[in-house]
Image 1 (spheres, helix red, strand yellow):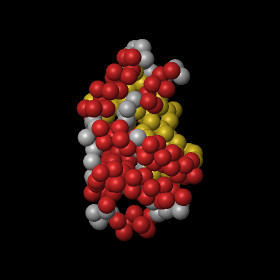
Image 2 (cartoon, one colour):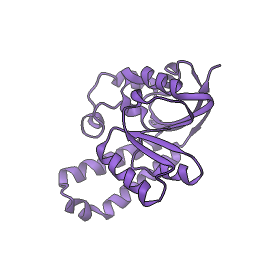
Image 3 (cartoon, rainbow, N blue to C red):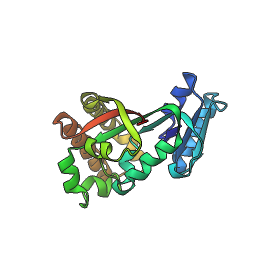
Image 4 (cartoon, rainbow, N blue to C red):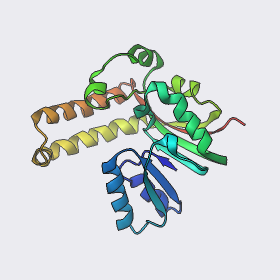
Length: 210
């Protein structure tokens, strides 16, 4: 089970490695494009893309993957999110989540603020801290963790450089100079956050406490 389809790349790669995948998204655009990509790859027998809320999913899954979905859930729903993961996990199964995090004291200080990123980039989103994740696991536990902070900073640099190389193409899609400045700032701001260690990105492996 993949919670948060994105544009379907992870589901495709998992299927090519032998997995049977159910992937869910709330985005009509992502649902349509991911389904088309799956069909073009000839993997419709191994990948099902559903337009659904994670709280509505039923069944049991040997493996659950959720990449940078927790940031979009919102702090008040973190317990609900982890309870859903626990409910959907088959006995002996594993969960892998990837999460961008900030220091716990900064997270607490910004819980009720209306930051620039929350206003323009990710409305309703909230970066958790590692402490917040650990405190909302319910019946789950962390069995392994890996930080990709340095790699993520480099990824953001490459994204920004490639975006700047294609500004004219972006403009041709109807995006104006205000969007261009905002997106350039966002990518540079995020890269600086990882390089300065203010931000981190973690991959956590989870299992049941029992």
